[in-house]
Amino acid sequence: MDRLTYDALAAMALAGLSSGIHAMRLMASRGLVSPQEVEEYADSILNHFTVDKSDPSHEHLAQLRERFEMRLAPAFAELRQFAKEHWIGRSKGAQP
Image 1 (cartoon, rainbow, N blue to C red):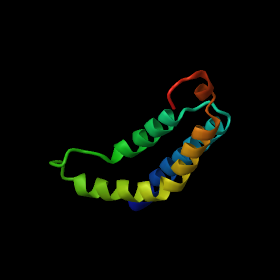
Image 2 (image 1 turned 90 degrees about the vertical axis):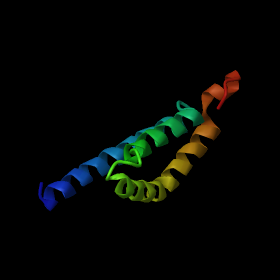
Image 3 (image 1 turned 60 degrees about the vertical axis):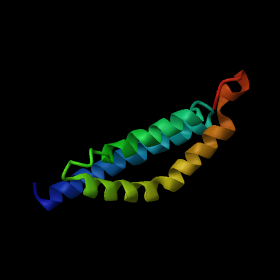
Image 4 (image 1 turned 30 degrees about the vertical axis):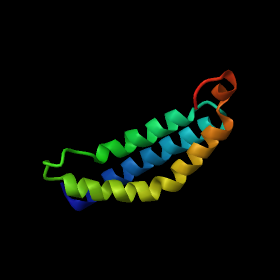
């Protein structure tokens, strides 16, 4: 695969990720997402960069995960705050 193909795939992946975060932001601001669901969503994205330490790509993926965590931290912080403030389940005695 040439560099242009990798760049195109990365751009599509980032567009999908951005779209997913925006959708989660809308749902959280409307009280439709619990804080726990936000954590599960964040974990589901970052777990794609986790492999067994014996895997040759472990170090590379660990570096990518760290970069993604840093870049996505503001968006996830916003999602956490929206979910905490607006989650409609909290008024029903459910755990956040």
